Amino acid sequence: METKLFFYTGTGNSFWTAKKLSLLLHDAETVSMALNLSGRIIADAEKIGFVFPVHIWGIPAPVIDFLNRLDMDPEKYYFAVAVNAGQVAATLIQLEKLLQQKHVKLSLGFSVCLPSNYIPWEGAETSAKQQKKFSATLDKINRIASSVRTQEEKPPERGPLWQNILFSAIYRMTFERVPRMDKPFYADAKCTSCGICEKICPAHNIDLVDGKPAWQHRCEQCFACLQWCPEEAIQYGKGTVKRKRYRHPEITLKEMLACVPGKNRLS
Image (cartoon, rainbow, N blue to C red):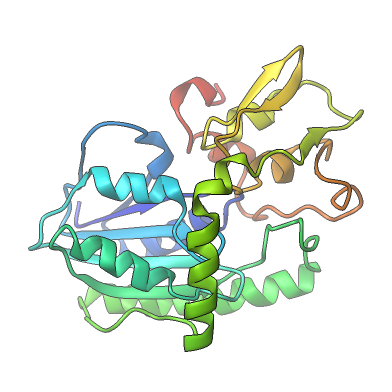
Protein backbone atom coordinates (compact mmCIF):
# COMPACT_ATOMS: atom_id res chain seq x y z
CA MET A 1 0.00 0.00 0.00
CA GLU A 2 1.54 3.31 -1.13
CA THR A 3 -0.68 5.62 0.95
CA LYS A 4 -2.48 5.17 4.26
CA LEU A 5 -5.10 7.70 5.35
CA PHE A 6 -5.92 7.75 9.05
CA PHE A 7 -9.18 9.56 9.79
CA TYR A 8 -11.28 10.55 12.79
CA THR A 9 -14.97 11.29 12.31
CA GLY A 10 -18.21 11.96 14.18
CA THR A 11 -20.84 12.93 11.65
CA GLY A 12 -19.09 11.78 8.49
CA ASN A 13 -17.39 14.87 7.06
CA SER A 14 -13.84 13.65 7.67
CA PHE A 15 -14.74 10.10 6.66
CA TRP A 16 -16.20 11.36 3.37
CA THR A 17 -13.11 13.50 2.76
CA ALA A 18 -10.79 10.56 3.40
CA LYS A 19 -12.84 8.30 1.12
CA LYS A 20 -12.82 10.77 -1.76
CA LEU A 21 -9.11 11.41 -1.37
CA SER A 22 -8.26 7.71 -1.23
CA LEU A 23 -10.10 7.09 -4.51
CA LEU A 24 -8.07 9.79 -6.23
CA LEU A 25 -4.79 8.48 -4.81
CA HIS A 26 -5.63 4.98 -6.11
CA ASP A 27 -3.25 2.78 -4.11
CA ALA A 28 -4.56 4.08 -0.77
CA GLU A 29 -6.22 2.66 2.32
CA THR A 30 -8.45 4.47 4.83
CA VAL A 31 -8.18 3.53 8.51
CA SER A 32 -10.35 4.85 11.35
CA MET A 33 -8.32 6.24 14.25
CA ALA A 34 -11.13 5.18 16.60
CA LEU A 35 -10.38 1.53 15.81
CA ASN A 36 -6.93 1.99 17.36
CA LEU A 37 -7.73 3.03 20.91
CA SER A 38 -4.62 1.69 22.61
CA GLY A 39 -1.16 0.35 22.01
CA ARG A 40 1.49 1.06 19.45
CA ILE A 41 0.44 1.74 15.84
CA ILE A 42 2.58 1.11 12.78
CA ALA A 43 2.03 3.05 9.57
CA ASP A 44 3.18 0.66 6.87
CA ALA A 45 2.99 2.92 3.83
CA GLU A 46 5.23 5.36 1.99
CA LYS A 47 2.80 8.26 2.33
CA ILE A 48 0.89 8.86 5.56
CA GLY A 49 -2.13 11.15 5.71
CA PHE A 50 -4.26 12.40 8.59
CA VAL A 51 -7.84 13.58 8.06
CA PHE A 52 -9.65 14.93 11.10
CA PRO A 53 -12.19 17.55 12.22
CA VAL A 54 -11.28 20.82 13.89
CA HIS A 55 -12.79 20.87 17.41
CA ILE A 56 -12.90 24.23 19.20
CA TRP A 57 -10.23 25.50 16.77
CA GLY A 58 -7.71 22.76 17.38
CA ILE A 59 -6.95 19.04 17.17
CA PRO A 60 -9.36 16.71 19.02
CA ALA A 61 -7.80 14.90 21.99
CA PRO A 62 -8.27 11.38 20.48
CA VAL A 63 -6.30 12.46 17.41
CA ILE A 64 -3.47 13.75 19.59
CA ASP A 65 -3.47 10.46 21.51
CA PHE A 66 -3.40 8.53 18.24
CA LEU A 67 -0.46 10.55 16.94
CA ASN A 68 1.46 10.01 20.17
CA ARG A 69 1.10 6.24 19.75
CA LEU A 70 1.90 6.14 16.03
CA ASP A 71 5.37 4.95 15.04
CA MET A 72 6.62 7.49 12.52
CA ASP A 73 9.51 7.09 10.14
CA PRO A 74 11.08 10.50 9.32
CA GLU A 75 11.90 9.22 5.84
CA LYS A 76 8.23 8.89 4.89
CA TYR A 77 5.95 11.56 3.48
CA TYR A 78 3.31 13.08 5.80
CA PHE A 79 0.31 15.24 4.94
CA ALA A 80 -2.95 16.28 6.60
CA VAL A 81 -6.43 17.60 5.92
CA ALA A 82 -8.20 19.56 8.68
CA VAL A 83 -11.97 19.54 8.14
CA ASN A 84 -13.74 22.60 9.50
CA ALA A 85 -16.77 24.84 9.07
CA GLY A 86 -14.76 27.86 7.95
CA GLN A 87 -12.15 28.60 10.61
CA VAL A 88 -9.13 26.31 10.61
CA ALA A 89 -7.20 28.81 12.77
CA ALA A 90 -3.80 27.38 13.80
CA THR A 91 -4.87 23.72 13.84
CA LEU A 92 -2.38 22.62 11.20
CA ILE A 93 0.41 24.61 12.85
CA GLN A 94 -0.42 22.69 16.03
CA LEU A 95 -0.13 19.44 14.08
CA GLU A 96 3.15 20.53 12.51
CA LYS A 97 4.61 21.12 15.98
CA LEU A 98 3.35 17.76 17.26
CA LEU A 99 5.04 15.96 14.39
CA GLN A 100 8.24 17.93 14.89
CA GLN A 101 8.41 16.51 18.42
CA LYS A 102 8.63 13.09 16.75
CA HIS A 103 11.27 14.37 14.29
CA VAL A 104 8.79 14.18 11.43
CA LYS A 105 8.04 16.85 8.83
CA LEU A 106 4.49 17.77 7.81
CA SER A 107 4.99 18.25 4.08
CA LEU A 108 1.45 19.43 3.31
CA GLY A 109 -1.42 20.65 5.46
CA PHE A 110 -4.78 21.59 3.95
CA SER A 111 -8.00 23.08 5.28
CA VAL A 112 -11.33 22.04 3.76
CA CYS A 113 -14.67 23.63 4.61
CA LEU A 114 -17.76 21.45 5.03
CA PRO A 115 -21.13 21.99 6.73
CA SER A 116 -20.99 22.52 10.48
CA ASN A 117 -22.39 19.92 12.87
CA TYR A 118 -22.07 22.18 15.91
CA ILE A 119 -25.76 22.35 16.66
CA PRO A 120 -25.49 24.43 19.88
CA TRP A 121 -24.80 27.40 17.60
CA GLU A 122 -27.10 26.61 14.69
CA GLY A 123 -28.98 23.86 12.91
CA ALA A 124 -28.05 22.35 9.57
CA GLU A 125 -27.71 24.58 6.54
CA THR A 126 -30.05 24.27 3.59
CA SER A 127 -29.35 21.44 1.15
CA ALA A 128 -28.37 24.01 -1.49
CA LYS A 129 -25.72 25.55 0.78
CA GLN A 130 -24.45 22.11 1.73
CA GLN A 131 -24.13 21.05 -1.90
CA LYS A 132 -22.18 24.20 -2.69
CA LYS A 133 -19.66 23.31 0.02
CA PHE A 134 -19.46 19.68 -1.11
CA SER A 135 -18.72 20.80 -4.67
CA ALA A 136 -16.03 23.29 -3.62
CA THR A 137 -14.43 20.71 -1.34
CA LEU A 138 -14.37 18.08 -4.09
CA ASP A 139 -12.46 20.53 -6.27
CA LYS A 140 -9.97 21.09 -3.48
CA ILE A 141 -9.63 17.36 -2.78
CA ASN A 142 -8.64 16.93 -6.42
CA ARG A 143 -5.91 19.53 -5.95
CA ILE A 144 -4.79 17.88 -2.70
CA ALA A 145 -4.53 14.50 -4.41
CA SER A 146 -2.42 16.01 -7.18
CA SER A 147 -0.06 17.57 -4.63
CA VAL A 148 0.25 14.32 -2.65
CA ARG A 149 0.93 12.25 -5.78
CA THR A 150 3.90 14.47 -6.65
CA GLN A 151 4.96 14.76 -3.00
CA GLU A 152 4.89 18.53 -2.94
CA GLU A 153 6.14 20.37 0.12
CA LYS A 154 4.79 23.71 1.31
CA PRO A 155 3.74 25.38 4.58
CA PRO A 156 0.45 24.24 6.12
CA GLU A 157 -2.61 26.38 5.61
CA ARG A 158 -3.69 28.61 8.48
CA GLY A 159 -6.17 31.30 9.39
CA PRO A 160 -5.42 35.03 9.77
CA LEU A 161 -3.09 36.04 12.61
CA TRP A 162 -5.83 37.38 14.90
CA GLN A 163 -7.76 34.13 14.52
CA ASN A 164 -4.70 32.03 15.26
CA ILE A 165 -3.94 33.96 18.44
CA LEU A 166 -7.50 34.29 19.79
CA PHE A 167 -8.86 30.87 18.87
CA SER A 168 -5.70 29.03 19.88
CA ALA A 169 -6.03 30.62 23.33
CA ILE A 170 -9.66 29.47 23.56
CA TYR A 171 -8.61 25.96 22.53
CA ARG A 172 -5.95 25.83 25.24
CA MET A 173 -8.33 27.16 27.91
CA THR A 174 -11.10 24.67 27.09
CA PHE A 175 -9.08 21.56 26.20
CA GLU A 176 -9.11 20.00 29.69
CA ARG A 177 -12.80 20.84 30.18
CA VAL A 178 -14.11 19.24 26.97
CA PRO A 179 -14.78 15.75 28.42
CA ARG A 180 -17.27 17.24 30.90
CA MET A 181 -18.99 19.41 28.32
CA ASP A 182 -21.50 16.57 27.92
CA LYS A 183 -23.60 17.77 30.87
CA PRO A 184 -26.27 19.49 28.69
CA PHE A 185 -26.99 16.26 26.74
CA TYR A 186 -30.22 14.42 27.47
CA ALA A 187 -32.71 12.14 25.72
CA ASP A 188 -36.28 13.38 25.51
CA ALA A 189 -39.52 11.39 25.40
CA LYS A 190 -38.98 10.38 21.75
CA CYS A 191 -36.12 8.04 22.75
CA THR A 192 -36.85 4.41 21.77
CA SER A 193 -33.79 2.88 23.50
CA CYS A 194 -32.37 1.79 20.12
CA GLY A 195 -28.80 2.20 21.40
CA ILE A 196 -27.39 3.88 18.28
CA CYS A 197 -26.00 6.75 20.36
CA GLU A 198 -24.05 4.32 22.54
CA LYS A 199 -22.76 2.43 19.52
CA ILE A 200 -21.70 5.37 17.40
CA CYS A 201 -19.82 7.41 20.00
CA PRO A 202 -16.10 7.26 19.08
CA ALA A 203 -15.15 8.27 22.64
CA HIS A 204 -17.16 5.48 24.35
CA ASN A 205 -18.85 8.19 26.35
CA ILE A 206 -22.37 6.76 26.46
CA ASP A 207 -23.83 3.88 28.46
CA LEU A 208 -27.46 2.83 28.32
CA VAL A 209 -28.93 2.94 31.83
CA ASP A 210 -32.46 1.58 32.09
CA GLY A 211 -32.65 1.88 28.31
CA LYS A 212 -31.70 5.55 28.20
CA PRO A 213 -28.34 7.14 27.30
CA ALA A 214 -26.14 8.34 30.15
CA TRP A 215 -23.09 10.43 29.30
CA GLN A 216 -19.89 9.49 31.16
CA HIS A 217 -17.84 12.71 30.93
CA ARG A 218 -15.43 11.49 28.27
CA CYS A 219 -17.02 13.68 25.60
CA GLU A 220 -15.17 15.03 22.56
CA GLN A 221 -18.00 17.29 21.34
CA CYS A 222 -18.33 15.51 18.00
CA PHE A 223 -22.15 15.40 18.37
CA ALA A 224 -22.38 12.01 16.66
CA CYS A 225 -24.90 10.86 19.27
CA LEU A 226 -27.24 13.78 18.64
CA GLN A 227 -26.84 13.99 14.88
CA TRP A 228 -27.31 10.25 14.21
CA CYS A 229 -30.26 9.67 16.53
CA PRO A 230 -33.03 8.43 14.19
CA GLU A 231 -35.78 9.94 16.36
CA GLU A 232 -33.98 13.26 16.99
CA ALA A 233 -34.52 12.48 20.66
CA ILE A 234 -31.09 13.59 21.88
CA GLN A 235 -30.82 17.25 22.80
CA TYR A 236 -28.06 19.56 24.00
CA GLY A 237 -29.79 22.00 26.28
CA LYS A 238 -33.10 23.50 25.25
CA GLY A 239 -31.90 25.22 22.08
CA THR A 240 -31.50 22.13 19.89
CA VAL A 241 -35.06 20.80 20.10
CA LYS A 242 -36.25 22.44 16.89
CA ARG A 243 -32.93 22.66 15.07
CA LYS A 244 -32.33 20.66 11.92
CA ARG A 245 -29.81 17.83 12.26
CA TYR A 246 -26.73 17.34 10.07
CA ARG A 247 -24.75 14.30 9.08
CA HIS A 248 -22.98 13.82 5.79
CA PRO A 249 -25.64 12.66 3.30
CA GLU A 250 -23.28 10.29 1.47
CA ILE A 251 -22.18 8.42 4.60
CA THR A 252 -24.45 5.69 5.97
CA LEU A 253 -25.04 4.67 9.55
CA LYS A 254 -23.60 1.24 8.83
CA GLU A 255 -20.39 2.81 7.49
CA MET A 256 -20.12 5.02 10.56
CA LEU A 257 -20.60 2.14 12.98
CA ALA A 258 -17.79 0.29 11.21
CA CYS A 259 -15.49 3.19 12.17
CA VAL A 260 -15.75 2.46 15.90
CA PRO A 261 -14.56 -0.65 17.79
CA GLY A 262 -15.89 -4.10 17.05
CA LYS A 263 -18.53 -4.49 19.74
CA ASN A 264 -20.42 -1.59 18.20
CA ARG A 265 -20.50 -2.74 14.60
CA LEU A 266 -23.64 -3.73 12.78
CA SER A 267 -23.77 -7.37 11.70
